[in-house]
Image 1 (cartoon, rainbow, N blue to C red):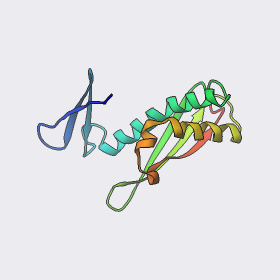
Image 2 (image 1 turned 90 degrees about the vertical axis):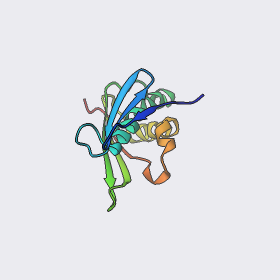
Image 3 (image 1 turned 90 degrees about the horizontal axis):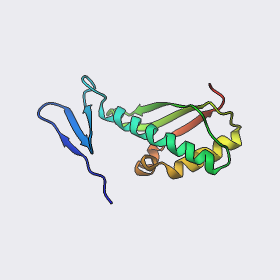
Image 4 (image 1 turned 45 degrees about the vertical axis):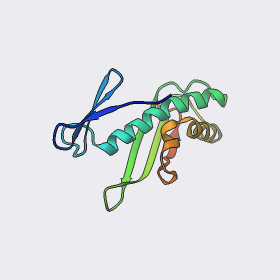
Length: 131
């Protein structure tokens, strides 16, 4: 099995991506659409949500309810991504032990997490009962 994306740029730094029947625009300058790093961070967090949900079920924590992730990507002097931090808020109350177990499992399940170099794996803080 493979994943296929067709990326087209007519001119400039904007790229139109065809992903199955979906169109997704990324603008490296961030002027007309999310920039490349914002798109990466959004994909990472979007992958992490179901990983958290499945991890919670598999670790007997149950349904997390509403989940919200604030993502911060730190940049180095060359404007390259050098760190990622997630602040995860869940509707469900979680104690520290439950949060740790869910995050550990989510890290194993998240395909984007797995694809990033180790130094870019997100530092994760969970705030249960946030809603």
